Length: 84
Image (tube, rainbow, N blue to C red; front, side, top):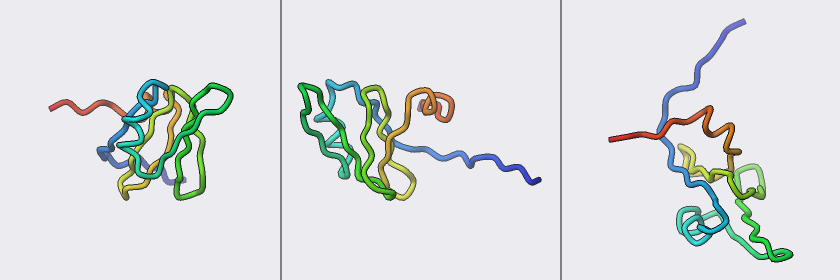
C-alpha cells in the first residue's frame, strides 16, 4: 500500500479563548458569534457547512482561503509556529 506525507504549507490560525471573539471575527470572514445561556458561541461557515467551535479550538484559514476549526490537540500535533 502506498504511503504519503503531508506537504509543508503555512497557514494562518488563531486560538479562540472566549475573550478574543472580536479578533476572531476580524480574522474570519466566514464566522459569526452569538450568546446562548450566557456563553459565547462561535459558528464557522465551512465548505462542508456550519461548524460550531469550542473555546480552545483554533480557527484556521486554509490554503484556498477557507475557514475551519481544529481541536487544540490535533492542531499542536499537526502544526508548528513559524519563526522569522
